[in-house]
Image (cartoon, rainbow, N blue to C red; front, side):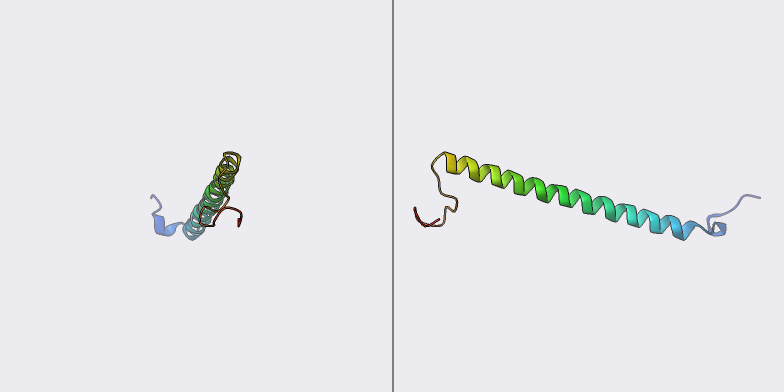
Length: 64
């Protein structure tokens, strides 16, 4: 006779492992995206400064 899902004692472990894997993927993807955004912002600021712009456009020239 075939076993049903309820007969498997490891079902809870599979759910926990799946949740942990999902949380790990979410953590690393969000960390990567945050670092990528910060890097892109840094590059944009360097380009603005190289082009003669200010590092903070809200401040008047010379007060950055």
